[in-house]
Image (tube, rainbow, N blue to C red; front, side, top):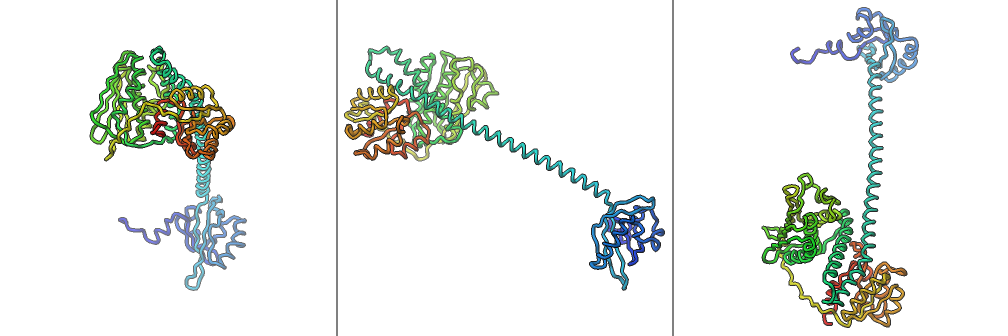
Length: 523
C-alpha cells in the first residue's frame, strides 16, 4: 500500500477485536476475520445462519434477554458486558461486549464489538501485582524515611546534649579558674621581684593554656550551630599578629622553638572581630607548636596582597599526609602521629580557625609536602574598603583609685582573691556571697561598681541586677556580670537585665583594670 492508510474493508476484516453485525432478530449478517478466527467458523457458516445468542451459554443467553435487549431498545447501546461465547470446539471464550443499535433504511442493525477478556484479566492481574509491589515499595520507603527521621531526631538530640554538656563543662571549669587567675595576679603583684620567676611563669603559662582550652570547648557549639556572632570593627592586623606572637612566646620557649615573625610595614586593615582574629592566629601558632618536635622552627608571616590580607604559619614539624589534607579542618580531627604525643590537644583548634575565617568572608587552606616535611597554613581575609584604623587610645597602667566596688560571688575563693587584687589597686571593696546580702549592704556602701556572679544561691544575678537598678543610686551604678557562661545568649540576657558589661571567668585583672579606667577616666 506504499505507506497509505488501509481501506475500510481491510480495517474491518483485520481489526484487533471481533466485529459482528446482526439484524434485529439477532441473525449474523456480517463477521470480520477476527471474529471467525476466535469462534472457529468460516464467514459463510455464520452469515444468515447463526444468531449471536446461539453462541452464548444458557446463563449468558438469559442475561442477554433480560438485560441487554431492554437496554438496547431504550438507549440504543450497551457497553462493557462481560460474557462467555462458545466456539466451534465447545470451548468458552471470555469476552467483553459493546453493542450499538443503528437505523439504516428503516431497518435496525446491531453492531457488536468483542474484546478478549482473558488478556484483560491477565493485564489486570499484572497491573494489580504491580500496584501491590509499588504500594509495598512506597510503604517500605515511608518506613525507611520514618526510621531516618527518627535517627536524625536522635542525632539532633545527641548533638544538642553534646553542646549543652560542653557549655556546662566550660562553665564548671571556669569557676575554679577564676580564683586561680586572681590568686596568681595577686602573688605577682605582691611578691614582685622576690617571687621565683620560673614558678610564676609556669603557673601563668599553664593557667592561660587551660583557659584557652576551656574557651575552645565553648566555641565548638557556636561553630557547629552557626551561633557565633562577630563584633565587627576596623582591625589593624600588624599589632594583632605581633600581640599573638607575644602571647605564645612562653609556649614556644618551653618547647625550645624558634619563632620568626615577618610582618608587613604599615597598617593592614580588615573589617572583623579582633578577638576572633587573634584566636585564629593563636590557634595556628599553637597547632604548629604542638605538631613540631622540640627545637623546631616556626614562621609567622603577615603580608598584604591586592585586596587581601594574608597570614601564613609555617613549621618544620611532622607534616600532613596528602590524604589528611582534606579533613584536617574537621571537628575533633587529629593526625595519627600526634596521638602518641602528650601535646596532641583536643582536635578542635583548626575547626575553630576555619569557622571564624569563613564568618569573616575569608579562606584558610593547608599545605604539606608529606610526613616529616612540615606544614603551612594560609589565611586570606578581604581588606577593609575605605576604612581607617582608629587610633588606639593610650592605656593608663595606673588603676582607678577610690572606686567603690561591690563583689558578689558565692565562690568564696574567687570573691576573696578578686577583692584582694582590687584592694591592692586602691579600690574600696566589699564582698558578699548572696544576693540578699548585696541588697542589704548597697544602701550603706553605695557602690559605684558591682561585680555580680550570675549563679547565686538565693537569687540569680539577672534579678539582682534589676533590683540594684531600683535601689538609691542604682541607675548610675556600673553593673558587670562575672560568670562562667559566655555564649551570646548569656550576653543578651545580661544586657536585658541591665548589666553594662559582661566578663567571662576567669577574669584577667588587666582587662578589668582597663575597663574601670575607661569608665572612670578622671580618677
